[in-house]
Amino acid sequence: MALQGSEEMGEPVEEPEDLDDQDAVSISPAEEITLPPGPGSDDRSEQAALLPWDRFSAWLHCICVVGFDLELGQAVEVIYPHHSKLSEKEKISICYLSFPDSNSGCLGDTQFCFRFRQGSNRKSSQGCFLEIADRDAPPCLKREQGHYYGYVYFRQVRDKSLKRGYFQKSLVLISKLPYVTFFHCLLKIMAPEYFEKQEPCLEAACNDIDRWPTPHPGRILTLPIMGVVIKVRIPTCYDKPGTSQLVQSAQGDSLVSIVLPTIHEVDLFRCFHPVFFHIQMLWELVLLGEALVVMAPSPAESSDTVLALVSCISPLRYCSDFRPYFTIHDSEFKEYTTRTQAPPSVILGVTNPFFAKTLQHWPHIIRIGDMKQAGELAKQMKVKKLKNLKTLDSKPGVYTAYKPYLNKDEEIIKQLQKGVQQKRPSAAQNAILRRYFLELTQSFIIPLERYVASLMPLQKSISPWKSPPQLRPFNQQDFMKTLEKAGPQLTSRLKGDWIGLYRCFLKSPNFDGWFRSRRKEMTQKLEALHLEALCEEDLQQRIQKHTEVEAVDLVLKLKDKLTQAEREQLPLQPGTLAKLRSHIEAVIQALPEDLQGILHKPPTP
Image (tube, rainbow, N blue to C red):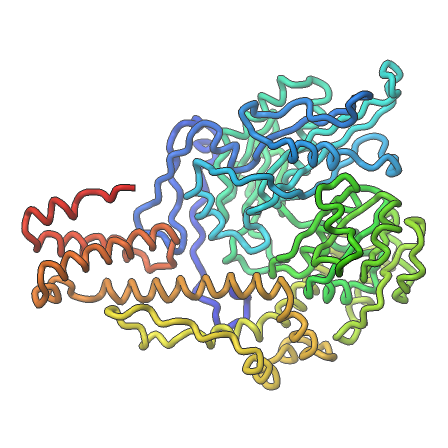
């Protein structure tokens, strides 16, 4: 995805029309639904037949109830729908991650999230739809490939009738989607009902979800759940960064109970206020994929802070591993805490005091205090030395020997301090901080976008009768030369060692992930331009000069091109695929009948 201001930006893409909400609610799970054409689709709408539970699976893998047994400890008591599959390793991960550490003392209701590795690859009956949805999603909202998210609603209340003296149970939503705000909102509706009415209401909730329209980017969706209606819009990669496209309309909203302006964003200002003076350094550490551990008093504060760190480099996708809540029982515990090698590129959120000792060799440690006093700013302005971090009782702050590449931006500190003094609403403070991070990331990434766009071959070099030209390779020295005249100084007031920051970034997993994604997009663009050039040729006139064997070879190659374009959802001009099909048909019709019959047969899988 190219960022605003880059030379690679294309024309604005027209948003698909909203679903008819009433129809969306009443569709039966086994009916077919019509997906709107995306930017790379043919002018005929794509059809996807969804089976029972496919709509549910587009949002969630399953719903788990995790309870505490005096003899067994934590255990998965219920999985909905009952046909959902989890490996034993996955169940164990869910069990331990669904309960706060005993030292957290979370009485009442607590919400947090975790992320864990998927045990094995599972095929979905909606592969085609998921690819289309992922294509249009922003980088940070693409479906997870090798991990699941767990969204937890944990209840712990005194109950003298139980041996342990406490009722302890978690309702957990397992999903591939990073829609943290949306799923926490969903749990606030579902969990209190479940704790009161038990399993029948879970079954009803699953049936409600299986009637929802699928989460296609760009659509405004109304989602009924247990008598409540939530209205959301799934963002697209074509949205202007930093804006919300969801507006509340008076007409048709009379039945809507909750309008969510965002499905995934956490409150950055609330999360960062304990380490307020170091936000710019934290941005650098996340950008460079440095090993970071967040030590917090509860899973809620741990997971929110890790998610805030990951999102502070948006619209760049954070490409390393991150665990919003991590425990000593995690299957990766030994891998991530070993002292025999350098800490991996990962962000961990922990609450157990044991980690203060186990992870004290890590280069960057963030200690978060209680977030409830969000109106007060942290007073510790200096970065602390790692040797001062002995226990989890250490004062809040950032413990590191890292020297930032960029000079400190005093303006944003003053602006937010003034907001605190004037009692500016938290939402406004959050918006200011989010805009600051967005502009900082854009200033950093636009020179890279501009350089990578220059690696694209000229359109005139594309010949329909030759293979598409290749992208030129990324050359670090050539890129560095462009920074003198077209570097971040054009859009950012910050001074410092930008060159050093770029050198370090080019070695990071975030650059690798970003460049792979851009290279794939640009290669697909070249394929699309090549196909469009081919469609403009007079193929019938051309085959008159060739033998039947060459004509058959052309048909087979064109069919391969058609299959590739449909499979990869190439960004083609409207009507291109229809034109290609008619070209293929015209060439076949010019051949003898026996060959026509063979070429009209569908290929064997």
